[in-house]
Amino acid sequence: MVKDQKLRRFVAIGMFSSISYILMLLNFPLPGFPAWLNIDFSEVPALVATIIYGPVSGIVVVLIKNILDWFMTGSETGIPIGHIANLVAAISYILPTYLIYKKISSKKGLIVGLIASTITMAVVMSFMNYYFILPAYSVLANWGAMSAAETRAIVTSAILPFNLIKGVVVTAVFLLLFSKLQVWINKVAPAKV
Image 1: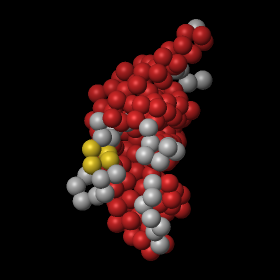
Image 2: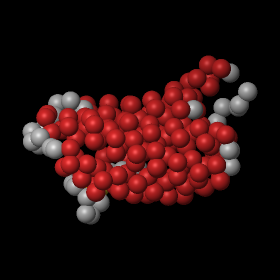
Image 3: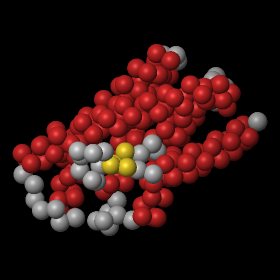
């Protein structure tokens, strides 16, 4: 029985990773934002995996998705800066939802978790972009050096609002899917001890 559960989890992580990778390819820009900021729904399968199997499974889904994308599409800098940013964004989105939903296992808990996740992702990505991602692109992609004021302006006018919008859109899609998949999710989730 335990081997069967481990095998199911392993196969499910592979399936969720594949779906997540495909959804990552179906990205699109938002009007009014820089072209390099794209929305995709690849966090949705990772969030389902997290709710069913726990946070490590969700993180593995996101990690596999980003490794696949890096191998298949590469990186303009040679270093997967964008993939690392996507990994950090996804983890900062799925973990708060899991932690809150685990404490408050209801639709209200899920909604509170998703709201907290959206805010967490936006704040974390603002700091990451200010201190690491934008400076790394400036050097490695020859964007030219940005002053602290220019970096702050990009973070406050593009990064923060984009991640808030992305969080709201992904949350809406996830809630629509969750309402349809909740019975299945409860059925396939391992029994809690």
